[in-house]
Image (cartoon, rainbow, N blue to C red; front, side, top):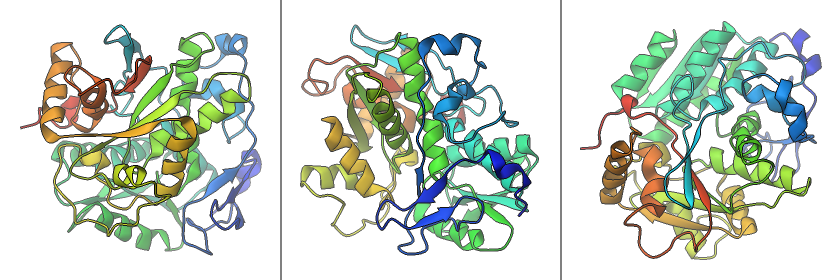
Length: 377
């Protein structure tokens, strides 16, 4: 790889578990000591509200809070998605209105810009669908060859989208973890940039712009709670990053309400048991309509559980029936969202048991477009 463009990369990787460090320009894709995901040693500067009026109409408007300095070359105008009310206390952020129709564009644009500066021979990713379509699109925008590993059974509409962007799609027998293992084997080859939305922390610094946009939209405040779907936890951990950064500037941090499908809820079970990370045996993959959050062994599990507890939040789980009902309820309100993307509405919307928000105001993300999957059977 070439590194001439990396004068604008202003930080280094650090392992949250053992403290190992590595130069972003030469680092392996995971910690060489424990094989875990990286964090960044990076001190952001949250912008002032009055700075944003002249900023670009994309998530790059929060440049001082992002770990890539200089003018970015890779963008599709991502971010700044609408915030619309659903009830008196709950609003929805329409992140399915992104260039590739999912919130994963927030992180993928950061990975693609980093990869462009590194200059690899090809970009590799693994995905159950939306992350792969985002990485494929932004790799195309950056002029980089791309290869995406997906588990068998991935939506044909999503794999077709990846191919349309020029990516080579590798269908891996087995579930989501099998696809990840195949991608990580390829990531060890020379000249490869592993655009991992789990292991690479630049992705989290992209997803944190979800909260920066809420802060800007709400005039310098945040809702009392953020309801977030959790599989690998990339949106939740990005939200936690932004909440901590803004709290240092005096903004009240919200409670993080994490949502999993009942059919695959290792983190919810660990949270209920008071565990710092899941200790139960990794379950065999169980089919669920919320395929995007059906992750049996999230590599950042410890960080996810800690972030929810530190925020004063909790975990909720939703049944397949609730997911079906929530998708139809949102469609009746004019919003056609894929099953994974309706999980949060299933957890706190009409028909949810009790008062899951405990009277708090909240925002739910609608993360992926229903056009990618169709109506749940």
